Length: 472
Image (tube, rainbow, N blue to C red):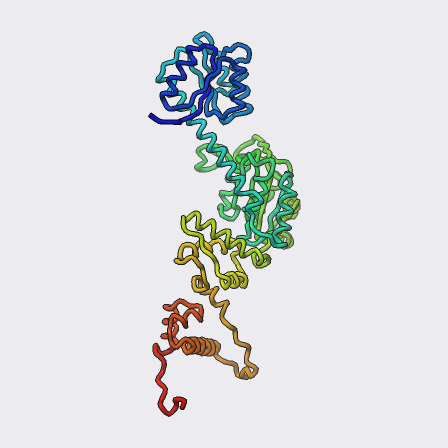
């Protein structure tokens, strides 16, 4: 017997019905409470948490429809099954239209009772899980989870807080990988539209000939292969937010159609004549200079001004280097959790190098690096030798330019090779030719050092010093 499957409340003024249902359901492992009238049932509903309610339709005083109305309004995640006599089945069907999950007759077969209750409890479980997922999604995109306390990103956070409660169009400006999509999620999930859809469209990723249909939809027969009517992204976003990413890549013709949607929130599907109106908020993003594109006649000026209601410039990572340690540790935690690995630490030398790097890929590049380090680093501490070579090179001393640079110039590759060979010899001499220690001094893997020694013609063992040259 399955135990503790669900908490169920049975409300019925017929003691035999209450007792019969209680015995059947408790035999299935459910926890069952009973009430002889609607008033008592309502008190129990307010004081305790139930997964399912079975209520008689005809109760003295507070009736079954009153119980149903309370459940639909106050506890919509908990399904309600109506119990009725044969002569009032039509009323039970009407109750289902008002939100009842199902109905049962008082002379119910035990197997039917068990089946309907099992289905209702599964429905209740799925609704609770969906609600929990929505809460997790909201928490995930809350401001508290946006990492950074630098002055540059704090200004962005302040703008997000101000615009989230409005319906104003937002234009996000910033390089690729700076977190524009994350900011879009933060705006949407902290706005009154949070329970509506958030529909993203990457205008650069969809071929030009398909983008119009993707945005506006099409009617059946509008073009070859249009075998059925399709709803576009603007319709899907009704009641919520549409995110137009990389909007600068949109053709001039399509820009004009987007302009109309921004002006009056209406459009027609391809091949259609019916005007469709939508209630949407628009957030657009680009990594290009739209004002420069307007000057080059590559982007419509009127569309630019429609989009540029509230511009938010998202700073690149190189302008918020004080956030790098916070972001790096955040991504380490996320990657360690997803890969089910122990949390790793970054050495001070690694943090120093991360701050020196220019981060052309911005936050996305930093996140990818942390995932690589979690995957490949064996120890608990991530040190310089665990980083890719481009980071290790940042730690090498750089020679000052020679004051006597030759008039005829020099062969750069030969000078670089000589400099590298000299550094390798110095490291070997300082470590008594213990190659693992020399490699550590040069921030190289031992294998890489051996390859470079072979390439530069550095011997594997220290050269013998003639007796006459040995110090006395």
